[in-house]
Image (spheres, rainbow, N blue to C red):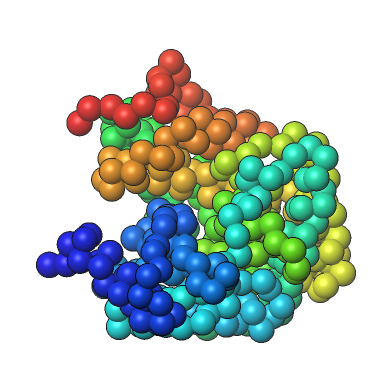
Length: 337
């Protein structure tokens, strides 16, 4: 069994051999919710990133394949300098550390989100998605079922009774039908402020795209504008959404029958699907995987779910169920088993 120290030694040895420098060192660059990690090194005055993607846990091939297609479509993704797919090591372009999240302000949001929506439109109009796994009914259901298990069950200690399951399933049906009625396109799946980097040319830099699917046209837009890590006033978000709807219509991805109200419903409920899933996933990352870093973001995600659901009468019972069990509970602190 390979230990963490064995992996670190192999990673460093591979990087030194690849760059021909026996003195270089690796420093943590970032990690994500998966088993993948990123390391920064410098050689001859240039900074590089080593992506460590253990093949048995996180096969690097999907990242490479999607990255090549995104680059061909005009997206700024990390260029690959060297790779060892057997070990799961890649030497890639360093896009820097200026994530959108800490950079966004009231004054620059229009410009930065404008760049991001330009990139999103390129993905949706230029990327072939016909061979990607479908964001189908089964996957939509699996995403929603994470919440009752890990939020209601594990964190709040509540097992829904039969009547409550009826409420949950009715709400989930509304959300699923909303997703399935939308046009299909390439879906990044995590197109948000922690996966977009501010770069000098062809902004933004786009990362963490290996889980791409063929799915609803509003999914990535909701990931971007209803970000789990930052909140904007509803009026401002709806202005961005409407401007993007008009661009999609001009590009032919939606037709004239998709008016402002219908598109906003698509956006709202698709974002709600994402946040219901994340509400369970963030707790699963802690209770199952020992990763507490996402707990602080749970109240924001929870508020997204209940505030959007309140706008739709058919989801009133769902909101009441969540509020009944979450009221007065600390959503940021783990509970004992």
